[in-house]
Length: 304
Image (tube, rainbow, N blue to C red):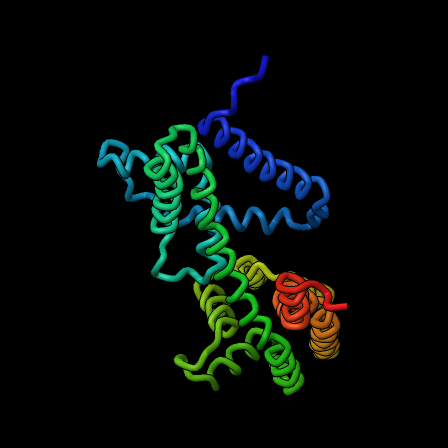
């Protein structure tokens, strides 16, 4: 007795299970093989919570307000998104748009689109859980903006370290050296890196210690190179060692690593070119070479 065929609803259910299973397997493997975190980040994580919690962008939400406010508060409390969205917004440079609340609304919009879109097309209720994919999709957009900003910071970072070394060698300490460098750059011409250094100087003038201001700089950028730079300055400040040679060696090391990275990308270019060759170029060449032969075979045989 033959089994009944699989209906469209069951087909989409199995497809959804396969998609979510793939996401779960990738997440588990990523967490399993991820390198362990650095052991000296306890102070930095405390500063992150303090930095994020000082001015919450979600304090204007009313628990007894509109349905959208209640939905926002429910998602923030259920998935603990308040700290995460604040951190993403901070690493994007705290732009006015999108604000953390706008980022939450964008996640909700994508979730609704991914849930209701397939349902309206197919009429299958089983496809509504696909909204979870839409809820996670804007994170890739935010991370892309963070990577673009980090690349802009790293582009000017070795030059900034060299300028600090020259100014410190002239007799200034590192904070006065940063202020002197910033004074020679017009505000409209300042890059992301120089704006971050300006924030650090302003925090010191507001009463923060230099150590905390430096750690906040590393926290806002999220770059291991800036974190190493901050650790280098703090260690030199505590031990009283000369900072000029350390900064020069660090800038030279950053340039050397950037050159190695460029050489590595150049070496990978030939291998990456094989993909478009096999997909686009080779099939076209084979068609042009074999098409006359195939036409002869179809029309009159081999001819001998």
